[in-house]
Structures are given as C-alpha cells and as structure tokens.
Image (cartoon, rainbow, N blue to C red):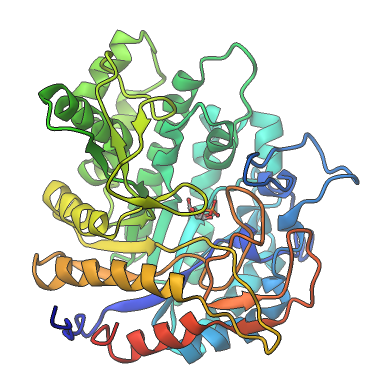
Length: 477
Ligand code: BGP
C-alpha cells in the first residue's frame, strides 16, 4: 500500500500527557497536604493497587517519590522540547493548592510550583494543557466528607478551579475538569470509586447508586467551573475528559446490537451531560426504575445547561466487545467479552487502532464539537541495554498504527481534532498497578517498582521516532 505522507493541520497540537501524582513525587513538599493518591500501595499484574487507612512503614507507596518530577522538571521539559512538543498535558495536584481541600485561602508555595512549571513550558513554546482533578483529591475531603458523596465538595472544587483559572489564565488556555469521569461506570472495581471520587464505600452500601450521586455532584461542579472560567476569560477552552473504549457487538444479532447501544449509552452519558447540558431521558427513567431517589435539584439542572464544555478530550487505549446477556442493563464488570479479531497487550488491553477512527467519528456525530486525544499509548515492559538504549519497536508500531487512523479521521472524514498527547510521555507510576515497570514513555526513567535506581533519564528509540513525526507534522510516520 502507498505511504500516506499527508501532513496534519498546521496548528495541530502534538505533545504528551502525564498526571501530577504519577510523576511529581515530593508528596510532602511545598506545604502539600496528603491526597488519596498518597495512600495507594504498590499492586501487581494479578492484584490491583489497594488503599491503606494511613501511611504505614511496611508498605511501599510509589507516588511518594514517583519519578521526582517535582525537582527534575526543567530537565524533563527540555527533553520534551527536544522532541518538538507543542503542548504538554499535566494536572494540578489539588492538595498542593488546598492542602486540606476545605480551606478559604490557597497555599502560595503550591501555586508557585505550577507557575514555575508552566513558565518552563512556555520558555520552549509548549502550551500547558491542564486537568484539574486527575484521580486525586485531598485526603481530608475523603476522611471528613466521604469524598464526592457529599454535596459540599462542589463548593470546594469550584473554589480550587477559581484559584487556578485566575492565577494561570495568562499561561494556560486549555483545561479539563475531571480525568476519565466516566470510568466510574465500572463501580464494582473498587479502585474506580476511590480514584475518581475519593469514595471508600462501606459494606452493604449500594455502590451503583453512590456512583451516580457522586458523578452528579462532579458534573455540577464541572459545569459551574466551566461557566466561571468563561466569565473570567471567554477565550479559555475547557473540555471534558472521557475514557473512550468503543463497545462493539460480538455478532449482528439484533439483541446484541440493541444491548451494545445501551452499553454505549451507559458508558458515555457523562459526555452527553458535559456537551448537551442535560441528562438523557433513558437515564432518568433508569434512576426511577431503580428507585435511586438521587439528590438532583432544579438549580443543578439549570447549572448543567449553563456550563457546557468547549471540546471533548478523551483517552483511547482499547475497544470493548459485548453480547446480550439476557438482561437489559449493562454492567461493565460482567458484560464484556473478548473480541476474537484483535490482540491484547500484556495487561489484557485489546489493541485496536481502527477503533480510534471509529471513536473520533462517533464523538463528532454525537456532539459536533472539537476533539482532543489526550491519552493513548502502550504499557509495556522495556529493557534498558548496557549502552542505555531501549529498542521499543512494539511501541513505535502501536503509535504508528493509531496516528495513521487519526490522520484518516482528520483528513478523510473531516474530524475537528485539536491535538494528540500520548500518555506517559516519560515513564511514570502506573495508575492501575502502581508499578514503574508498566512503561509508556518515549523517555526511560531508571527506577524499579520499589523506587530503586538512579532516576536518570534515557531516550528510547520511540523518542527519535516521535520527534520525526512531530517535525514532519505527521507526514512521516
Ligand atoms: C488512564 C489514566 C492515566 C493512566 C493510564 C494508563 O486511565 O487516565 O492516569 O495511568 O490510564 O493506565 P495504567 O497506568 O493503569 O496503565
């Protein structure tokens, strides 16, 4: 087949993505309070990370040191600049700005850290793209209020957003409110309630109802933040951040098709609310059917309408497949099946580049908004050679295949895509396992699962490959 040497649009934002707690370390520096992410222990392939009630000596907490970006960011940003990044997606650790989350006044040392970090990016013309809440909230809000089960969190989050918007408005144009807000649909996987909502559910509690209530408060908080941001500066671009795993029917049986539609509605109603400003009717009917009796007020519904997002940011790693299980409501923990047509990564993530083009078209048809692929990548075990090289041709192949599908979506299908920030552009702590050995980066960090190593940085083969992709604006993949 002939090579597709077309370029992406001239203003396309090539970059990379990370999240504060997965790379900063410095978990008690600069007046930072503890966040829920600081209580996560190491996990492994067979066991998810667990959360402890308090920090104990006989556990290892990978996020405490992470890759020490807190001190080394100038060196890392310089490497991103060498690759040609036009943007850099990171998050602001809420507990650096409000150590407890419910104070009136922010912590100046925390604010200063991000001022310096964003200045360092701008020095190289790298635009910061900032997520306000990426899988972490101040621990105090979990212990005192029970996380997002409590309506008062809306006020605390909006105060945090307000402080960040005003402080960094002249440095940051692109924002997102909550990372992968829709991953909570997998509410039976304990980690998803902890990380998205800071909720530690009690035994016997209805986790599903809890998830919908927390999600509602988060969506109201997000809408209030969007409205506020636009009132501070109408040029501010504030998006949602959705974990996109398109769901396919296993067969063309009408029951499978109908069930797949419900599965998609169940995973993606979050972006319906973000983009349209109201709940889809099927979901309101579902709440009634379940007798959930949620705390959703008329004022909340008005606010959802007033704070619709400017763009849809989303992560894309894999696709899912389902078949009709004999009941109507989709439950992510039980109703997914393997897709016989795609291969999975070492962690069982079903690799499907075509699904990215499908997702880009699906979002476009549904919302008619600009899109931003803010995460994508392959978690793999890398080998550092004696001469400090990493020959990660598997990662290059993954990225090549996905960028090619993105190119077709943009240039053939006319999708309005703002940019592409592959996940973990520098190796960092895995959110799912807490391991360092599940790596995504173009830059290798010499550190093992227990934080041992020199923390030196090395360019992988994919570093030079991606540098050339950016340099040719996607013409050479
Ligand atoms: C997304 C998260 C990221 C990130 C990535 C990879 O769900 O937004 O924080 O970690 O997935 O996941 P993992 O680290 O579990 O491989």
